[in-house]
Image 1 (cartoon, rainbow, N blue to C red):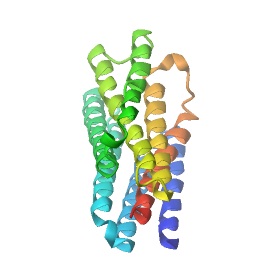
Image 2 (image 1 turned 90 degrees about the vertical axis):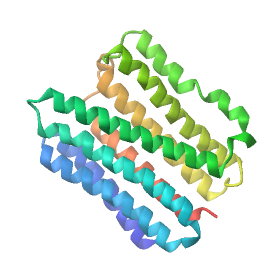
Image 3 (image 1 turned 135 degrees about the vertical axis):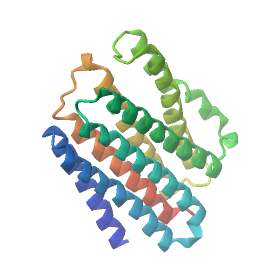
Image 4 (image 1 turned 180 degrees about the horizontal axis):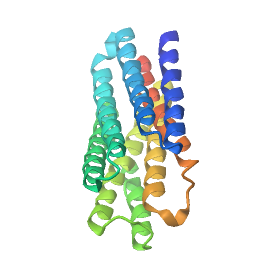
Length: 236
């Protein structure tokens, strides 16, 4: 466990470094720090699987979701290398977001497999919460995205909502011990990071500081990923 925690601390420290370089517009250093953070949380998962071989199936599922996160990280950082080519920004941003979406889908499916929603169907009543909040923001005219992309965000945040519901179901069902609360904390932090990032980029009227936002988005995201990896230790 000591090595796991060391790698986890390295991950979070790298995320803070990434935020610092982001505020300084040091593109290459930011990319290196973000890559180190992403590789670190993947190593956390690998190390956890190695130490809890009985959880290999669950661990591999978590690892695959983390890999999607890493690929998304890389894609979303590459646009900074081409400041004079907006078409590159559009390409990397679109595919990076799509990969993150797939990672969220994997997390949701995993949670629904290990904590069948059929046992807690009442939780599905909360499925529209995040999409309705996003729809309210879109209709208010505060979103700067084109209409089509704005409404695609409703789908994205429906899946984010689904991840949280899956995590709550994970706690309510047979995994209500340590692992359940770890997964719930990871899912809430992940959702918070995504929501905050979306509001920061696409709701300029909120006037979220460019000097503050990076220190909120990346660390909460990385802590969430480390917690998902940590859950591999505790899953029965």
